[in-house]
Length: 505
Ligand SMILES: *[C@@H]1O[C@H](CO)[C@@H](O)[C@H](O)[C@H]1NC(C)=O
Ligand SMILES: *[C@@H]1O[C@H](CO)[C@@H](O)[C@H](O)[C@H]1NC(C)=O
Ligand SMILES: *[C@@H]1O[C@H](CO)[C@@H](O)[C@H](O)[C@H]1NC(C)=O
Ligand SMILES: *[C@@H]1O[C@H](CO)[C@@H](O)[C@H](O)[C@H]1NC(C)=O
Ligand SMILES: *[C@@H]1O[C@H](CO)[C@@H](O)[C@H](O)[C@H]1NC(C)=O
Figure 1: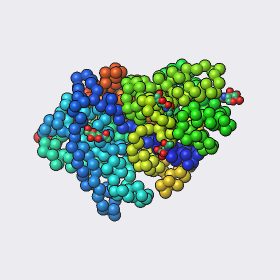
Figure 2: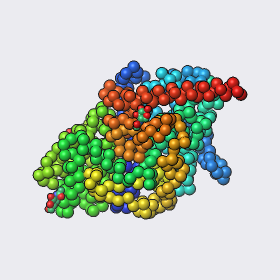
Figure 3: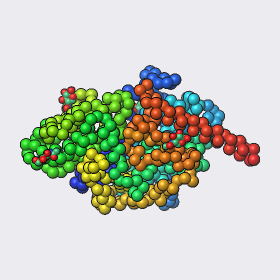
Figure 4: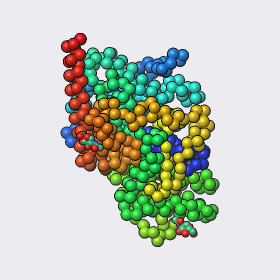
């Protein structure tokens, strides 16, 4: 997930930090270089692409009311070459805000473990994303049509879909189902197990910030993690980024300074107005956030094509001492930003309206953030390296109202999914990367014997869900092993239960 979607709102509001809507588009594991990588015991030959079949299921537009009786076609993908029928498990990807084929192609972990588990893989598209549009091309045309875009409706789709898959496939009737997801998809996986324990025997929720909501974690934690990543990746790195905002402000005071900045950063459109400056700074801030999310131990293409450990590469340009001039400091900053935007050397200019490639479903996520998914964020410039910015719910709400004619419900997620009171649930793994800013809202301690948290200290955003790679740190290898061992445990539990039920029935 990235902060990208909020920027449109932020630009309009000209507020520094009120709008940190999450756009989980970044969660898509798009990394061609890794897609067919070689790894311990498993091989993905470049000749054999990920292969699956595509299906569509008629789903109710509204699962919870009876007035809107229409249906739409939900897309889902099935890969059953490794499936042991009858009764082999089903790994079910709870799709997030994007094209499901992208998740499918890139959630390498599921493909890596399918054979060992004898599992069928099912990837379900989230309504309002990809092809699964409840009102076709009109789905985003007015707020009435968007009314059915909620996590609750998406979870109900998943439950109905699983029922359908099990009934329509010979040998699947008694297959235990495990939910898997990353980022917003990880939140859905966890909530799915909480709400439908009758449908899934357990869930792997990777980099799932289910506590990033109002009142659950301090609003500044997210940016603190970003800052720590930079602090440990090079000398003076966080300090110089912290100083850069003042230098930018200094230069933006004059027309020649603005011109210099525009040239130095090779911007597509020159900086002119105060609003341009706010946009520029929020774009730069988002750039550092995105780098933190994708600080992977190997070359990858995720939000952008990047070298291995990209923050270390960026920080090389920021190892300056405090005596440098504003221009020298900002030269370092522009070089560092270009690691993110121009690693392949193919970028002609930097566009401050863009921070991630291939963004999908941005509008949908904006709407979700403007209704249920209110995730407060703030900075203070002391514990983090950003310009101070307070969380301002009212301003946020006003922007949402202007954009979608709806107002967010700040406390609803806590009521709906239990907030921090989740101990009565079972069989959920919450995995978190120590480098991932989203770990700030994740479950990072063991809640109970069967609600376990796995920490991956050198992991960025859901590293564990990616294909295994030779350069993976031991912590992520261990995490995947542990995850798999829980899968087996849940499968054994389910088999025992099934036997008991069969005997007594
Ligand atoms: C996913 O992979 C399939 C088959 O390899 C390919 O046809 C499709 O374009 C890919 N989808 C995306 C979004 O990358
Ligand atoms: C900005 O300008 C002020 C006043 O000229 C100066 O003291 C300061 O060092 C400059 N740079 C930064 C990063 O604030
Ligand atoms: C990107 O890198 C290439 C190759 O080094 C360079 O020619 C080009 O000017 C760079 N683009 C930007 C926007 O800096
Ligand atoms: C910058 O990106 C925006 C949004 O994608 C696009 O509309 C605009 O044309 C781009 N500008 C340039 C100069 O490429
Ligand atoms: C939670 O428990 C598991 C199993 O004992 C352990 O491997 C893991 O490290 C614990 N997680 C945390 C965050 O302490």
